[in-house]
Length: 184
Image 1 (cartoon, rainbow, N blue to C red):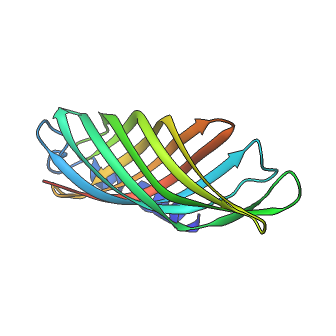
Image 2: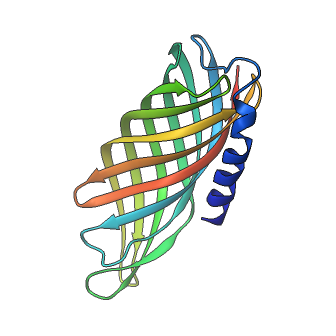
């Protein structure tokens, strides 16, 4: 969480620099690849407390129109966390993998930064481990979020976003992500 706060402060500090300079690379025909680190909060009707696993993901997309892109993401868990089940047992929760497809709309803020919203569908495979058993669960759900992006040049950008990855069958997964992307 400290890393996310530090990056947020950095993004806010360099925001005035993003108001001037060359045009942002969010125009029709631009493609991009990026990576993100996500700190998640997993809560469930079956748990008393929530778990906070983390994951890394790759993202790639293309702007079909100015400020409108389609994007695919794939991620995997890098850190698990424990939560308390209703029966008092500790449950270790982790993300096995994540895949999604989104449509993203950008609202320019100056020439090199933008606020964006996105929506689409995600599939999550999670693992829950207890002392007496292990459960792998896969869920497919609609997901959505919003973020802020600063493009440091025509080829490099940074972003901070919130994502509601999943809400289905009594499970909720959301998180904050920080990342970088390259434009082509």
